Amino acid sequence: MRDLAAFGKNSALWPRSPRPGRRRATAVLLALTLALAACQSANERAAAAQAQAQQLAAMGDYRGAQIQFDKAVQLRDNSPDLWIARARNQIQLGNYSGAFASFRAALDQDRSNREAIDALAQLSLASNALDDAGRYADQLLAIDPGSLNGRLVRATVALRRGRLDAAEQMSKALLSEQPDQEVVRVLASRIAEQRGDLKQAVALIAPIFTQGGGSPDLRRQLASLYQRGYDSRALLGVARREADARATDRDAQIALARVQVLLGQDDAAATTLATLYTSDADDALRDATVAMLADTDVAPARLAAALTRGSAPSPALMLAVAEYAVRREDWATARRLLATYAGQAPTAATTDAQGALAAALAGSGDAANATRLANAVLAFDEDRPMALTARATAALAGGDTNAALRDARVIMRDDPESPYAYALLARIYRAQGDTLLADRTLADGARAAMDDSTMLRLYATMLAQRDRLDEALSLARAFTLRNPMSASAWATRQRLCRAGGDGPCTARSTAILARLHGQAVSVPPPPPEETTGSPDYSAPLSDDGDSTP
Image: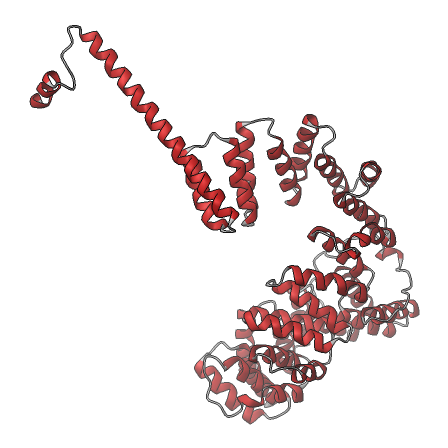
């Protein structure tokens, strides 16, 4: 240490000073110079990272850009422009909570930053944080009283809070000032919808769509209106435009296929699904396809014929339609679609299809071959639900309800929302003579899968058989209010209306089914309890513990 001190005293880099105070002043000055240089270096590095981030974002590499934006804000966290650039990139990534935090950081640096306040108002509204949305809208309007977004947010907050008169007054003012603004017309359309004037709601925005325009928000609103009007023919154009805009989005493609099936455009639906399945095929997609087909209530053989008319569809799509056929108990169609898998040893690629084939064999009464094939599949993969269903069905047919129950419980464990698992369990309990437990199982299924049309049919049918027709009708009414395009649900409701001798209810259900299938028929007006402002039918179902045979 003494050598180091001696070096400091004698070095030419640090010459001796006749006054010790001068040495201290020089040291302080050097420290400040070094600190300033380090600060400038950090700012320069932050600017370089931001520039690289913006270049990557311009090329569409938003993930790469995010890495650079994160690096930039670590180096410099006091730039509103940097935080806003980061927030814009996070929106492109769909990270809205992160974008909110970035815009909030920008606002902390600049309390009058209009873009940050505007974005925070809209993000708060999107997350239904109405208090925050209203507060940010007020801040925005304090800076710019004529702000379109501020006025839109304020009116939308009023609408969502049920202050319909106030929302309508604000909307009319906007519409008179800016009648060609799409966002203004969408807001006015939503208010008209809440008033129950669907024709006016459509008229406000349909011309924009017809002329080739329309944001995703407008398309969603227009689709919602056509669904509430049971207008499949009009909905087709919106669904097609949406599918084109979201070519890789499975929900958009399945929504298009649903409308095509409802309208009897089976070949077009088969093409839509075939295109989807070429690039995206997994268990979740098959489940979504089966649920969609069940909702349309299409005959499995009809769709199978459309698949065979086109070019060879993917095995995964054939399997999805075959599974739907099994669920609809169309054993012949399922066996025909899966015939190529008969006699093959199970592999990782074939267990699902062979399990479905085994279920079709069991359903058609070939218990021996069904059990043999199901056991082969389960030896390869013990959790295949269709193979378990096949073995349980065969065991039930043979009177072995305990074996059937073991397999059914495994299916339920792995998929507690499957209506088919609840149906199988109910059949087994009924075979064991426990009607109370069978009925309670269906009630549990209706709670677990509130928007599954198959579960609705099973549970409502049971209620009707137990002389609880009013409950069944209430359940069907609630379902169709939530799911107006479900042909299966309307068919269930139609049957219940007929069973109750309710002519107007039957006529309305019949007209809606015809309209869903593309017929130009008028629909009788809904009863008062189904108009806008009706009670909330999404409340949990009551426990069926007191059901009686």
